[in-house]
Amino acid sequence: MSEDEPQFLQLGPPRSTPDGEPRRIAYRTDGDMQGEGPSLLWLSGFLSDMAGTKVAALTDWAASRSLPFARFDFSGHGLSSGDVAQGSIGDWLEEAVAMFELMNARRTIVIGSSMGGWIALLLARHLARQDMSDRLAGMVLIAPAHDMTEALMWQKLSPASRQKLEEDGVYYAPSDYDEPYPISRFLIEEGRNHLLGGGKLDPGCPVRILQGMEDPDVPWRHAFALMDLLANDDVELDLIKDGDHRLSRPQDLKRLERTLQGLVEN
Image (cartoon, rainbow, N blue to C red; front, top):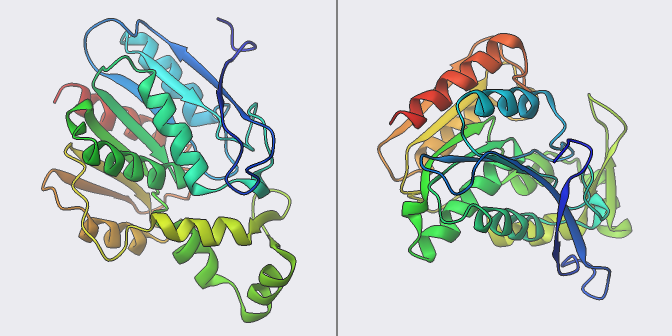
């Protein structure tokens, strides 16, 4: 299937609008999902999609090693239906679970970037509760924004911005990358159902964290806090001194590929 022809999953309406239209989730898969060895599943960040630089690099890398690779756009992002201002962590987790179920029970390495890192951890928690942790072959978390809605959004808003969000139902936050982006009251409130802070999580697989120390969106100390939340021992944190949030430079992509290769060979 060509890059211009994604497939679609259909799920129920967003949690914020239960009487709304069903979600159509655009996804692509490459490789033989019936073969042996691990598969790869990519989870994008907030306001990112499967057309990014890291995804393109991983598509080529996986193909060169005959590894199945799946990626998709969260609802409200990219080619999927919906409005990001109506989305929620619960919706996006549900979509990640649905994609994971397409992997035909293969052991899978989940790669999550920014918000996708949080979704990856929530997916691991979901699988543990279903006694399915053995399906995870590893996780690579790139600038993982766990508990993002609370720690990196709500707590950073000024009192005036919080009041506007409460009164209007949405606040448009300035962005260093593009137009101001929406933070909805529903996103904040629903996100509190999925916070990891205060508990311990054992994903049942090796975890590798890549974190730039010049990241303005997810401070490197946030990655240290995640280390304290993970209950398993096979966890490694790789700090990149001059790394930014995106970690999409050629040297960052090579680091990501080396990290994945280590998990594939594990």
